[in-house]
Image (cartoon, rainbow, N blue to C red; front, side, top):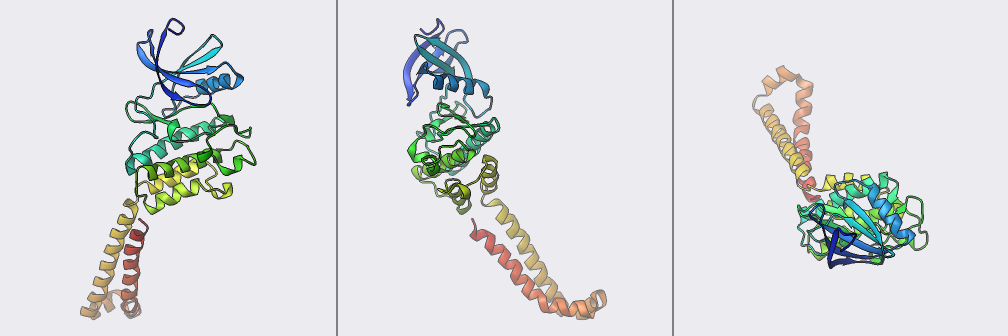
Length: 289
């Protein structure tokens, strides 16, 4: 038993910085996750970082025990596995992107960069909400970016290891693309463009802030909604113009009195053209879906 309070059970995760086990807190009578690390400055930094954060999509810090030359970080247990192990639908993938993005946006506002975003670091609570985990490579904005996973690491880190929010933007964009492929999700064009832009190899072409990524993601999250509304409005406009043009032909004298000869002549000439333009507005948004 750890510190006369925590029982430790099976290993549920393992990384470069330590081993995570399922545990049980006998005082508060709840399951917990316990990460055991060597007592190093980096491990103490990870504890300090997590203890300072409070966000619904960041794993919650509970306690720390230093015993036998080891640091035991006690935190919330994610019972839903990680994004790496989970089958996702398109709607769930979008939700993962939004919730992880919100957590990272908050982290950046605290002056920190995670530096190691990947599917296995996006855990799920029992309720199915995303929880960002593992802050072992977290760095201060402008500081040195250390560690990370090659597949999800921004290319510029190799030549210029400076911690910038763009690193997390890249990591999240790459993660979402990998998850979409692994789950055989057909991404709508706008979402694929959003994820690809986030994971751009050139940092200057990437979203510079997580807030920018979230704004575009929210816009593309419902690919059918806005185009259909625009299409419905354009269809009504087309119908109105056609009816207007036909009515002028049937009742020319009435429209001449109501609108004047100049306006009637102009509208009779251009109503078909305007109807075609409105019809194009119906079709074009649907091609963007």
